Image (cartoon, rainbow, N blue to C red; front, side, top):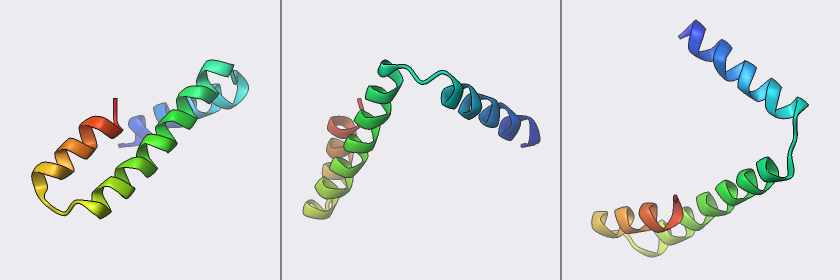
Length: 59
């Protein structure tokens, strides 16, 4: 767990130091896909539809 958290901290730190346009676009697309998943999941309450939301939301 400690090694994993340190690795994550290193990744986050490197991301903050080297902010590329591609990183920003990727980050924004992840946020939008996450919100899309929530909106989609709220509309559809069946488990199979949840999976469909996850597939379409997270690419």
